[in-house]
Amino acid sequence: MKEPEAGTIERWAWDYILCDTMAHKFAPGPVPARSEADAESGTEMPARRLRAPGRPSELRIVRKAEKTRGMSAPSGRARALHTFLHHELQAAELMAWAVLAFPDTPIAFRTGLLRIAHDEMRHMRLYQEELGRLGYAYGDFGVRDWFWERIPGSADPAAFVAVMGLGVESANLEHTARYAAMFREAGDEEGARVQEIIGREEIAHVRFGVRWFEFFRTGLSFETWCRSLPPPLTPLLMRGKPLHREARRRAGQPEPFLDELDAWQPASPGS
Image 1: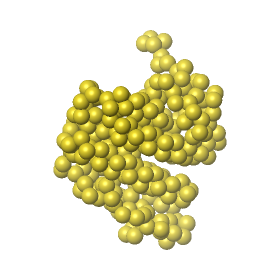
Image 2: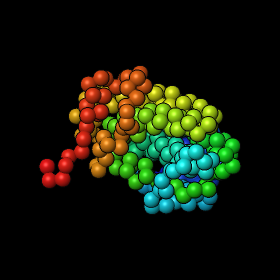
Image 3: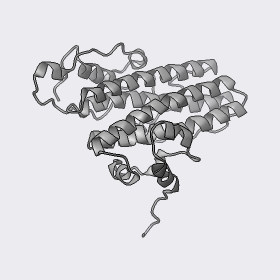
Image 4: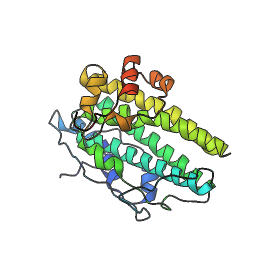
C-alpha cells in the first residue's frame, strides 16, 4: 500500500493511525491544509484501508473486556473511565481511517471527520485527567479494540457514518447520561460533570452523521440505516435505554426514526 504524500491530510491520518506512542495518540498536532488531491489535478486517489492501528506498549489488548462493576468504588469508576477513553481513541483513529478509505468523498466530509477526531482526542485528555484524579492511568486496565473489529467492514462512506455517527456516537448520548447519573449517585460530581460535557459535545458528532448519511443515501429512514450497518451489527448496540430523545432530536434524528429504533427487536431464532 503506497504511503500518502508528506504534508497532506492523508499523511496526517496515516501517521496518527499507525503511531505507537501515547504522546502522539493524545496530541498529534494540527492537520495540514493540503490534500493529496490538490496536487493530483483530478487523478483518482487510492483508497487505503488500514487493517489495524499502532498501539503504545503501555496498552494491554484483551479479547474480552472486563465488565465495569462497583461504581461506588474509585476503582470501578476508573475502570469505566478507562474503557470510555479507549473508545474515544478508537473513534479518533477511525475518523482518520475513513479519510484514507474514502478519498473520493467531498473534502468537507473528510476535513469534518478530522475535526471530530480532534474532539475525540480532547475527550481522551478529559478522561485521562479523571483517571489521574482517581489514582489511575491509561494502561492500568486491559483494552479491547472492539471498534476496529467491526467498523473497517464499512463498504462505503454511508455505512461508516451509519455505524459511527448514527450508531455508536448516538448510543453515547444515552450512555453518557446514564453514567453521569451513576457517578453522581456515587458522590463523584466531577466525574458526572465530565460525562455531561462529553454527552453534549456528541450531539454535534451525531448531527454530522445525520447530515452526511442523508447526503450519501439521499435521506434518512430507519430501514435505509439498518441496511447500511456493516454485518453483523444491528440496532441493538446502537441505542441505550431509554433513548435520549431530546438529544437525538437536537442532532437531527426525526421522530419516526426514533420510534422505530426504540421499538426494534432482534429476530427470534428460526423466524
